Every structure is written in C-alpha cells, then in structure tokens.
Image 1 (cartoon, rainbow, N blue to C red):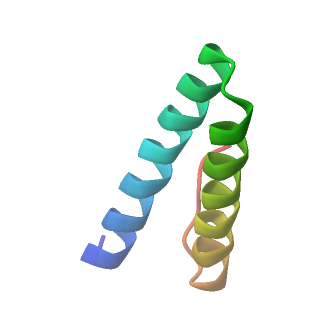
Image 2 (tube, rainbow, N blue to C red; image 1 turned 135 degrees about the vertical axis):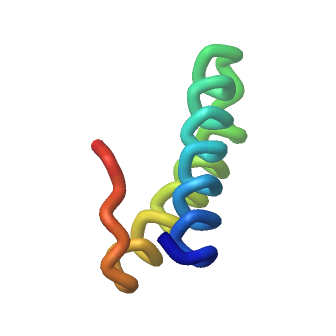
Length: 54
C-alpha cells in the first residue's frame, strides 16, 4: 500500500469516527461538516481506485 492510499484510508477512518461522535453529541452542524468531508474523501478514493470498506 502506498502512502497516498494509507493516508486516505486513515483520513476516512478518522472522519467516520468524528462523524459518529458528532451524531452522538447531537451536533447537527458538525454532522453536516463531517458528512461532507467523508463524501469528498470517498469520492477521491473512488477516483483513484482505492477500495473503502462499507
């Protein structure tokens, strides 16, 4: 696994964790921000052929 792929997957995992935390805390604004970031990261992964778990 190259550095780009590893870094991207790490950012996705971190963002998923942050999104879960925001949902648990009921912070609707932060949920939107984190979901947007996650969508962007997943799109980037798809564009580069990086498989992301479900």
